[in-house]
Length: 337
Image (tube, rainbow, N blue to C red; front, side):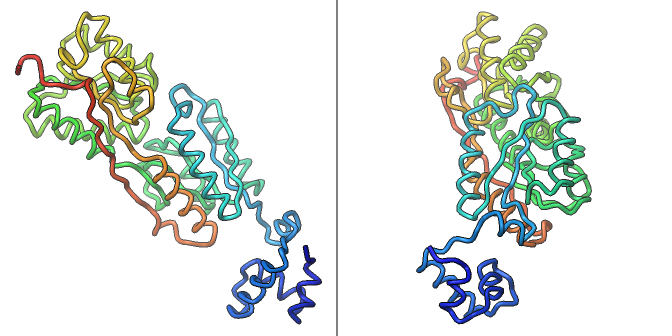
């Protein structure tokens, strides 16, 4: 493998010119850059990673801080997301580091350490909140980041999100078309943006059909939260359908339906969101919706790479479609048969 000096000598160029061509500096003519890259590939030259990072003032690392609270990132679909992100960043010459934080205060401290210590070149913000201090901080610091989800902050930032509002509106309309008039909503904690959007989709469809919004209970983002919320709903009324913010909550809700002596899919329909693998193996199999984690990961990685390269975050945002997946946990309303 050639050294930088040998490569420069072979090309008849200065070491500085060869180095700047390999690092992509715009002051090197395109023709010269192409010649240098071709020669480097032919000679199997690889720049010294530590020296290159020092020279560029970059870490060649991007980071994602995972909230550690229950129901966050302990599901297979997030492993799929991380796998997609890692492969995409690796192809662009970046390493992906994943850190965990136990609560919002610790999470903000991790962000400050990464940004102010210049320990990463870019960040991925997960599980966005309506009033998200992480995004507010990163936007003010003008640090490259992409959010998975939206907020209600009056700042421009790059983000990728699923169209949960339209998906939950459509799911509610499908239940109404099956004769359901008492469609209850099993909600995730209200501070999360995705919960507000999904609830709004349910509420819009219910109101359009002239139906009430009184059947709603909030629970934690896991099976226990869905179980407790569904128990509360079933104790005060008997909805014919439970529309749940996530699959894990839906699986807990199915347990509550069975405890009440009712049959899922016959007496009470249940719908979730995420298409986790466990949903296909419940009894009956869970009707759900899917936002492709491969699509999310690909778009997030491409956006962040562009932002690190100097792209304007105001030009980077995308809302992806959510696909319905019909299974046996839904059926006609019992009083419409």
